Amino acid sequence: MDSREPDTTESTPSPSDTRTARLFARAAIHDVPLGTILATVFVVVAVFFAGKLLYRLRDLLLLLVVGGFVALILNPLVVALQHWRVRRRGYAVLIVATASVVVFGLLAFAFGYPLVNGITHLADTLPGYVNNAEHGKGWIGHLIARYHVTTWVQSNAAKLVSFANGLSKPALALGKGALSMLVTLVTLFAFVILLLLEGPKIRRVALDLLSPERARRAEQIGSRIAKASLGFVIGNLILSLVAAVVVFVTLWILHVPFAMLFALWVLLVDFLPQVGGALAGIPTVAFAFVHSTPAGLVTLIVFVVYTLVQNHALYPIVMSRAIKLNPLLVFLAILVGAELGAWVGGTFGGLVGVILAIPLAAALHVIVTDWWESSAPRRTKDVSATPD
Image (cartoon, rainbow, N blue to C red; front, side, top):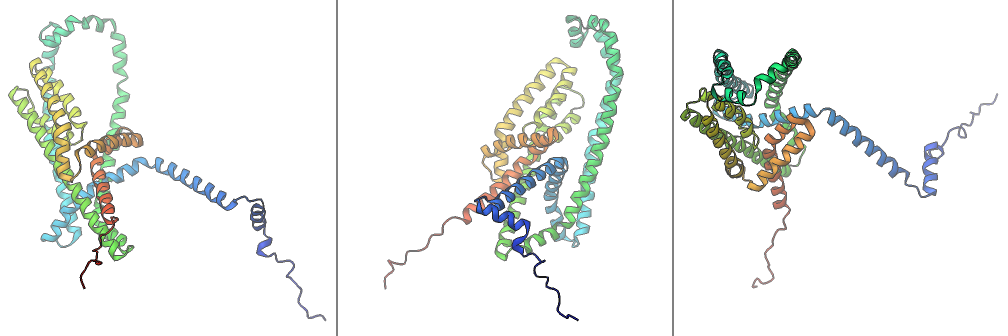
């Protein structure tokens, strides 16, 4: 009986005999950089799918960016409460969140209550406006009589009725949009709360990955960025408050009803850099024209003059003082942020880009300045001339 084991060395291929090895060997013979080609193709495909994924999640990413900005603004309040008497961060976050909800509710009530009263008053006085318009009284009646609006309405009554019947679909879409906005606000609020709660842990983990020197430097940069963002919010709030006071005084002197309502409207909408003044001025000026033509003209002039002064003088100066940024860079950051935001997320993205343009520009300025100062060559003393 033969006790010799079968020889299996011939049936086991060596690593150099595999198809992959032979392929790379043949490519090397013909001077073809097969490994470089495959790596390049892989990188291109990975970048393509990453871009598709980011574009698909663009709305969510915008929401996360807004939530991070809000958490960055509220974090100093949480830290201040912890340094005061509330030692546990969870309780401090609960207090800040509750206060934020209360402030938001008070603003909604302060804005919604006069709005409801205004709509009710408009509904009560609307028959009088219609009667004056039918008899050619007032500036609306004068326009109707001059441009023969009544004749046009009578000749196009069927089309107007069909248009009115078709308004139910936009109204339904508006209701769905309001519900979607409510869900978005709740999601944003939950994300901000989680960021405030888990922020120290995330910060600790990120700093532990760095060396002590780099961790200390990153902490200093983060503190400067948070300070600049808080300065942006305070400066923007001051400008919005000044705009609201100007509008309130103007409407009050002109005896336009609901001056406080429109002042609150300006206070909320004027927070948007550059475009906030125009958005706040359109309904305010329109209502002033409904009240009287002179009131509308004066309100229009005040809005145009103040918006020009604020956008081109007050805003760049205040923001440059608040975040230590050049006024020209502030103006350019707003334009670039609006364009990039609109390109990524449409109208909503444009508004987000306008709001976050200045804080992001300030953060970039802090990072670039720190890198420039740290990378500057250090001067050493010339010891060659030192006497013995």
